[in-house]
Image 1 (spheres, one colour):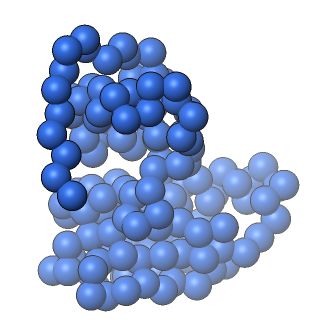
Image 2 (image 1 turned 45 degrees about the vertical axis):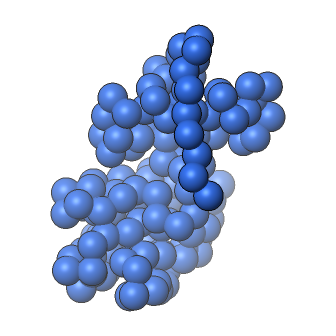
Length: 139
């Protein structure tokens, strides 16, 4: 399993130290790696994913790392996207812009066939796209 976050480069060394301390505190065995050039930091974890105690400690590790990343201006998502494990942090990271993000997703994917239910937290899931919204996409 991989836990991914990204922080501004000015906080990268702090994030590495925080990750080390967090996995030690929760008794998680894993490897820390990343790409220092863009602030991504990955934690590759090994363990018994069927063990409820291990999963509780792993989830605590993930949550603490994400909250640290957000506190220094980073992101919960990094390069690996949202996924179901990061949905709960979307509101904290993006605030009210989640509604606009949902509208854009609905315009580009009206049948919701691209990663259904894996991006937006539940409170945003049912939000309907405003009719007549025009969006310009520059590629």
